Length: 445
Length: 183
Image (tube, rainbow over all chains, first blue to last red; front, top):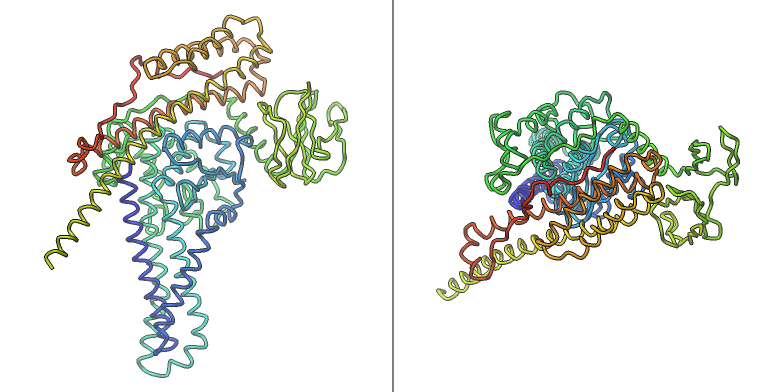
C-alpha cells in the first residue's frame, strides 16, 4: 500500500508545485497590465499572499468549513451505532492511526465524502439517504472507499488543490475589478493593448487549466479508492451494488456546492456529460463494471486486471499491484434479503436525525413513541393515544434520575441540549455534549 | 577537493542507509501494532459477553446449560495465551455463542429487546473487527516481507535481524467462519 501512497504524495507535490508556478505567473501577468513597471512583481507577491492566507485558513479550519457548508453534523456512537461500527471496522481494516470523526448530512440523496489534512485527523460524512438505503455490506463498501481516500491521502491533496483553484479564481476576479480603473490609465500604448489581451486570456484560461488538471487527478483517485475499498472489505460487490443504488437515485443533493463536489463518492451535481473533461468523477457505470469484472479476488492485482479488461489500459502502478496479490473475496453477509431490515434502517436513520435535532424521545407504556421537540416548555406531555401524562425528563440541578425501563434514554440538560444514555450505560456521571456540565445519573435500585 | 567529494558521498550513502533502515523498522512496528489490534478486538468480544448473558437470562433463565457454556468458554478464552492456545478457545466460544443465538430465536420478547438488539449489533461488529484486524495483520506482514525481500533492503535485512514474519493462518477453515448472529 505504501507504494501507492508514496506515489500519490510525489504526484501531489509535483502537481501543487506546477499549480503554484501557474498561480504566481498569473499574478505577475495580470499585475503587469495594471502597471508595466512594478506591476509584475506586485502581482506575483499578491498572488502568493492570497495563496498563503487561504492555505493557512484551510489548514486550521478547512475540514470544518467544508463539513459545515453541506450541513454535516458530528455524531457519536449512540446516534447511529451501525454506521459508527462500520467506520470503526474499516479503520481497522485500513490500519489508520485513528478513527475519523463521523458526520451525518440530512439529505435524501445517497452520498458520502471524506475530508481531512492528515489521516489521524480526518472525517467521514454520509447522508441520511445513504444510511437509509444501503445494507451493511454496501455501507461498508462506501465507507471503505472514503477511508481509502483518507489512507491514500487524497483528501489532503483535494483540499490543497481546491485552494489553488480558488486562489486563481480570486486573483482573476481581483484583476477584473481593478482593471476597470487600471485599464483606462494604461491602455494608451500600442504594446499595452496586446498585453491586456494576453492578460485577459490568462485570467480566463488559468483557472480552467488548473481545474482540468485537478479534475483529471481527482478521477484517477476515485479508481484508486475503489481498488482500496475492494481490498479493505474483500467484497467488490458491496461497493458495486452501493454505487448502483446511489447512481439510480433521481434528483441531486440539496446541500452541496462546487467546493465539495469532487470529494463526494459520486458527483452530487448533475453537471452534464459524465466522463467528460469537466467531470470530477469517472462514470459510475464504468466503476461498477470494473468492480464486477474483478474475477481473480479482491486485491489490487484483480482490480488492475479488471480495469484493463474494461478500459483497455492500466491504472495502478506495478509496485502497488505487486503489493496486493492473491486476496480472496469473502462471502456476502446477505442482509439485503430481509425486508424488515429496510424498515429498521429507516427507523434508525430517523432516530439519529431526531437526536441530532435535539428531540427527546419517550416511549409510552402503550407502545407509542413520543417525540418532544427542542424548546418544549411544559413539564409534562400527554400521550396522544392513551392520554397518560408523562413528565418531560430534565436534569434538574445537574442531576438525573433514570427511569426503571431499560433501553435508550434521553433527557434534557439545563442548557437545553439533549443528552443520550445508551442501554449499556452503567456510569454515575455523564458529560453534556453542549455545555460540558457533568451531570449525576442515578440508576433505579 | 577530492576529500569533500568523498565526504559528500559518504553522507549521501549514510542518509540512504538510514532511510532504508527506518523503513524496515516502520514495517516491523506496523506488523506488531496489527497483531496487538487483534488482541484488542478479542478482548472487546470477551467484555461484551457477560452483558449479553445477563440480558438473555432476564428472558430465558431456564436455558442454564447454554448460558453456562458461554460463560465457561469465555473464561477459557480470556485465560488462553499465545496463538496455539487462543485458536481452539476462541473457536469454542464461537460455537457456544452460536448455540446461544439459536436459543434466543425461540424468545420473541428477547428478540425485540432494545438492549439485546444493541448487543447483537455490537457482537456482529466485533466479529467483523476481529476479521478485519486479522486481515490487516496479514496485509502488514505482506508489505513488510515484500519490503525486506526486495532490493536494496534485502542486502541489510538479515544482517540487522529483520526476519520475514509469518501470516496469520487458521488451520481449520470452520474457525474462519464467524458465528451467525442474525435473525
